Length: 112
Image 1: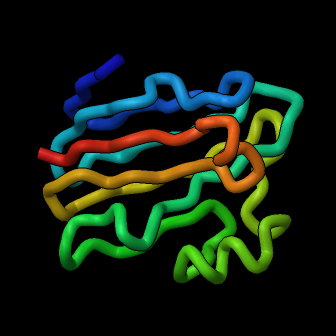
Image 2 (image 1 turned 60 degrees about the horizontal axis):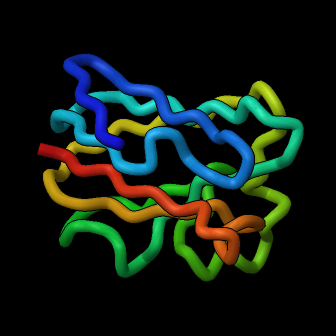
């Protein structure tokens, strides 16, 4: 599933998946991640899943994947909570949910 936006996009957390799983946006668009479930979720970039020169991102503010993995609770979003992200560097960004990564809760953002 892919979506496009001019001034922003939304990704919802449903069950153990991100919807849409793949999203295409323009550089400078804001992406809003919304947890609509009763389960806690996170949004965490893979260190090796970022374009060269792009900043790491994680709900909870971790500065690296290792830091996010070492304090999962800090990045958890409860039902109704939102995480906003603005990406400037073109390329492919891969991310995941820390507690549900083994269930395949991963996503991709393509910045054009």
